[in-house]
Image (cartoon, rainbow, N blue to C red; front, top):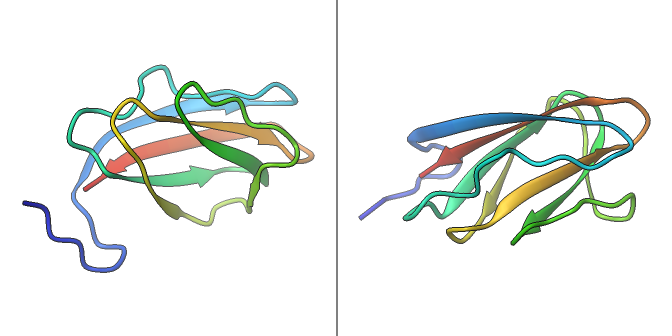
Length: 95
């Protein structure tokens, strides 16, 4: 059983995806047994979490270089689209 203490977590698989005016997601979805992700973007972005997500310019705003932790289910993924400049979305399993 995993015990969570704030933003402390055991990091697992980490993936990158490059986003522009076109939304992007890492190649692999969340692994079995993973319930939390750490998300970081290198430029301001809009993100969406879900099954086969495609972020749009009205989705959740995530400022550059500020990690965000989200609750997920196996098979979900993260998508990001730029606010004003292309960047890299980093998604790390964090249970």
